[in-house]
Every structure is written in structure tokens, then in C-alpha cells.
Length: 421
Ligand code: HAM
Image 1 (spheres, rainbow, N blue to C red):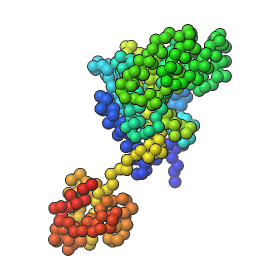
Image 2 (image 1 turned 30 degrees about the horizontal axis):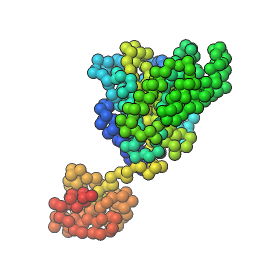
Image 3 (image 1 turned 30 degrees about the vertical axis):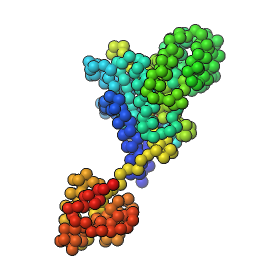
Image 4 (image 1 turned 135 degrees about the vertical axis):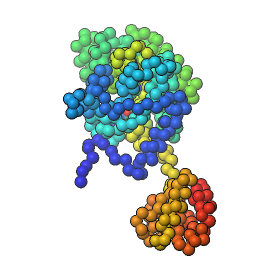
């Protein structure tokens, strides 16, 4: 007996349809928004992630050497890979590029409910659009996906890391240390760093700022706290609110929150996180914002914005809210009765499958009553019983598994009889 590695999950036949349901809602909506799918490798050269993602991610990397001595890492997210792909091969495509991906990512974190070492993300990026409409578009897709899944409890928190960076008169690396302490709400570390940088006076306004959250009026309050900061960042968020209304995003779906700092280092402008409040400790189901990575990877300056939703957490939230549609049941379970019926039963099974129906057949050689038990256990809608006498008459006995009612049906009408909804 082997155990799974710590922090990984098996997805059984009951759970996979839930994951596919949530994923398909994202894919459908992203496609309808004009996003197109891309797929990048599960592992990349280590430097891709150490270049700019920040110490939070670097500490959590699954890094290893391959047999040729190359330093590689399992992807901890999609953004760096998508931007590498963009810079190396997609740069000459008409802009904006709207790209989405889904798949597994890996982070060496302390596992708990909702926090794993292998988990799944639904990721979207817009490269080369104007900043404001692109930010609004990714927010509309992120919040819209939650709605399309059927989640009622959605709360986005929108901030602007550009405002904070503008307020911190330090080198980018020192800014990052301050931002990390704010992200973790580690005020001891914040104060110590500000002392080190000779600006302990900034501690009080920063503390006040990260506590500000609410509607558009919060932006005025925040502007008063950060008297030294440029006002454009607040004006930007006001305009963003106007666009979100045009997208049909309700003001109750989001709040402006100056404390959204994000755990990755590449963000430069609008940033957001989305919570599903009923999830408890690991309630953050998504995050994203405007960033600059193309430049770090050797590309030209171009606007970049995007987000990732955590699929595992979305499934938990959708399950808790009863939002997941039951998967399509098996239409027919075919039961041959007697040796002579076997081959003909397979032919009938094949015509049902060719008609687009879900159909299965006895592979064990059980008797009819055991087979009916099995059909019941796997949730088949109908059992199709095929005895030699019936086959001679080109007929089958169809049993409705829910009611137990049985009737004889001509083989020519069988697909209609078991396919009707
Ligand atoms: P992130 O906030 O690091 O952003 O991750 C996005 C989402 O992945 C989180 O909100 C959470 O739902 C889920 N997640 C993160 N860690 C775990 C974990 N250990 N177990 C389960 N779920 C987890 C990014 O990854 C950015 N690349 C998003 C982005 C795209 N920004 C711009 N473009």
C-alpha cells in the first residue's frame, strides 16, 4: 500500500464531474469573451520563476535537477510561463492577446483544507490592451465565472498596488519587502523595515490604509491618508467602478480595499482578490491584477493583466452552495441473457453508443438479477434486457430503473426509448 504524497489529492468518479463542471463554466465564458486557450509545459527552467515572482513563490518551488544537470522547477502558476511564451513566440500577433489556460500547479506549502501542494488553476491573461479596459475585462471574466458556476457568495476586493509603490520612496526590492509585510499584515516586520529604511513615519499611514475597505467613497478617504501619493491611481479605480457597472457587475460584488497587496512581486497596478466567504480559512478563490513580466523576460513594455482562480477551492465553494449540476447519468445498461445473446448485445450496445448515448454492458457474466443490482448501483436510467427469444423477435425489454416499470420495445426504436429525457 502506498500513500499519496502529502498535499496531493486523488479525484474519484464522484469528484471529477464537479471539477469538470466548474472548469467548463470558466472555459465557456472565457471563449465567449474572446479568450483563446494555450498550454505550456508543466516544468520550466528554474530562472523563469526566480526572476520576478518574489520570495513567497521561490521558497515554495518544487525545484530539481534533471539527468542532464539542468535546473528546473514545476510551475507554481501560469503567468510566468504564458509571458515567456508570449515574448518568445507570440509577440508579433495582433494585440491584445487574450489567453487562458487550465491545469495543475505546484507549491511546497503547509497543507491544510483548501491548501495543497498540487492544485489546479483557471488562468487568464490579456497582453497589449489599454490598461483600464483590460483590467475591467479580466475582473468581469473572474467575477462572471463565479456567477456562471452559480456561486451566490462572491466578494472581490480591489486595490491598486501602483498607489502603494508610488507612496514608498524606496528601491523596488525594498518596496517589495514592505509590500510583503503588508500582505502578511505583519506590522512588526513593517515597522522594523521602515526603521531600517529611515522612514518610520510611514508606518502609521500604511497601517491606516490597509484597513480601508468599502465602496467608491473609500477612495477619497484613502487619498487623504496618502497625501504624498499621486491621485491618478484613485481616479483609475473610480473609472474602473464605472466600467464594472457597465459589465453588469453589482457594487455588492466587490469592495475597494487598499490592503490588497498580493503575494507575488510582479504586480504594478490594479490588483484584486476574490473570496468565497463560506470557505473558512482558505476562502480566497482567486487573485490577479496588472503586472509587468514581459519586460523582465526581454520583451517590450506592454500592458499585462490577468488572474487565476483556484479550481480546488471553487469546487469546494460550489459544492457547499449546492451549485453543481449532477452529471449526465448512464442512459442504458445492457444485459445479455444467455450465451447466444452476447454478440448481438454488443452490436446493440454499439448502435446506442453511436447514437450519442451513454451505454454500458455486463463484462462479468452475471445473472440478470445481479446485473440489475449493478445497473442500479451505477445509476443507469434504463436496463436493456436481451434474451434469445426477444432477439429473435427483434425486440428488447427496457426497464426504467427509477420506477421499475418494464416494457418491450422494437430494437429499431431502442435508442429513442432510452435516449428520451
Ligand atoms: P495566486 O493568488 O498565487 O495568483 O493564486 C491564485 C489562486 O490559486 C488563489 O486565489 C487560490 O484560490 C489558489 N491557490 C493558491 N495557492 C493554493 C494552494 N496551495 N492550494 C489550493 N489553491 C491555491 C497567481 O497564481 C497569479 N499567477 C494570478 C495572476 C494571473 N495574476 C496575473 N495573472
